[in-house]
Image: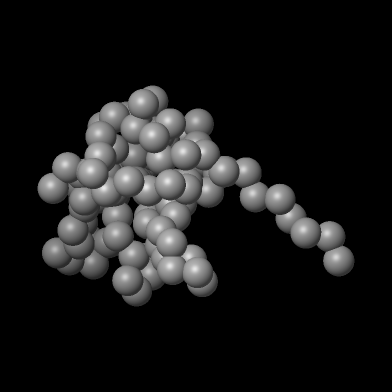
Length: 95
């Protein structure tokens, strides 16, 4: 069995290239949220999930899952699309 190597990027690199994100709170179903849909279309949403070990990691795009946190960035995250975002530092996230 061959292990698949997942490419990673540091959260600090994402902040440097795409700006400081804001936490995006879902007040309605994602499909009905026009602002969220526009952010997703422009590749500005990151989904933060917990790994099995309990550390936070990010995925570029909206992945609807229980317990996930969503971040909206001022600039496109396309350059980080196929990477797992590690080293999430909540001090750089605007409320």
